[in-house]
View 1 (cartoon, rainbow over the protein chains, first blue to last red):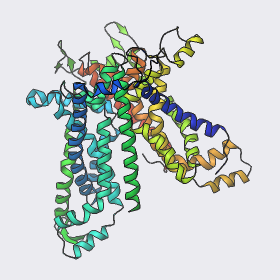
View 2 (cartoon, chains in turn green, brown; view 1 turned 90 degrees about the vertical axis):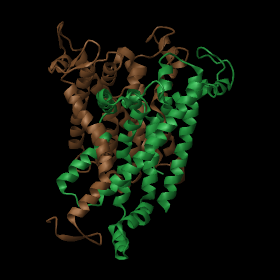
View 3 (cartoon, rainbow over the protein chains, first blue to last red; view 1 turned 135 degrees about the vertical axis):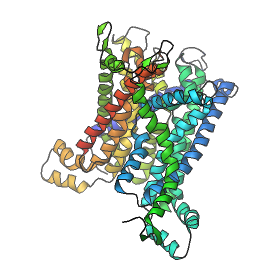
View 4 (spheres, each protein chain N blue to C red; view 1 turned 60 degrees about the horizontal axis):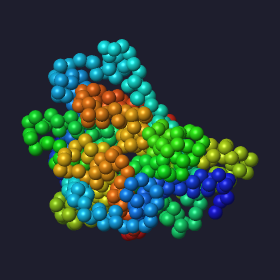
Length: 266
Length: 303
């Protein structure tokens, strides 16, 4: 243990307090009996009970999970084969650079510009195909677009740590392409694929901006619902909902830490 | 390197053409997806930015540079700096938010790296949780904390900063609080990776040579943390410039940033051509930001 100037631990603990005070305030007010305003009126769990009776919230929760699930499956498949195709084949330098720029586009484009570009694209597509009305399809397409590149980057990083010798050894034993992919590459890439998929899923759950620009009236997700509600004012239902979301986040973080620590050991 | 010559690739006797074709089958679906739904729409944004808004909010395919002259402040009523001011303010807020995050992240990372190894995991989790907590919830949480009934606003009212019974939002102060809270984990996490692996022998050496605290930091610590810091700054500055949720909830019309301006054009104003022009301006600012950051992070930087 090193001894630092007192200002170091002071600022460190202060920063964490700063990060957690608002979250704790939300949790405290989620069990406050007062319907209006923010004065303490005693403990209650009725806001939580009301959540499960609120059709809109249940529908938003379902939409959020459906969107995240479907888009993660599509993005994980596309992103994994993309990473293998990009990293394991003899592309010329120039083509590789172009493909790499394309792959990084979703990561460097500011979210709001990305969302605006999608809104314009869907707006024009709508003139030809009516399926591109704002709604779940557009949201899935938008989410997959940014998830694909995160999955490909995570899987690509894992790929870089796997020597081509293994592939060569399999080839020497007369394994064909399909066999190598199924029984050599995919098992070795599994930690990367799982990590990429978890990242993609969480990014989708957390997304607000892309969803905001592509959602329709029947595809409201939880972040969109919370945003729309808090713009109208403070409600205890939202405190309960936010606290639950916070608990889910804490649990997911714990699980993902476990998983990554386990796969690192393997 | 001719394409019909045979070559051995990872133990396989094949030709370059066959390999490229197989690589293409694998990479094409994902690449085309990004091309179709981001690269091409971005180019479309350039085209749309030069069109005109119709009377009902539709796009009229009449091409003119009007949206850009409007962004620069020229209109039939004369010149006004409103839009330029919003652009400038976005860069300004992003800059100061990033700087404050960096200043807070160093002590935070040092403190965590200084815990016993088995306790670091717990402290690190304390940063990771807000990192993954939904942005809308976190921005709203600040709205709640700054409400008139809570001690912060009451205290500010006692000091005479705000009138009695009014909240601390919408204000520039609230926007900064929201921004720093949002992005602190984004700076701290990559920075911590470097701080944990810091070579303290260099610090000891600097101490032996009677270097003061500032010189120790500048010459023995800072250079070792440049890669992580550089990632953290990129992860903060770029999204901070285009941030929409935080200024929308905490700044309101009083402290509008470029993200809000873009949203407004695609929302209530229904002026897609102007919205596209503002988006392009933000894209240019982003590219300039990445450029500057890459230049200053030097060879050690990872961007």
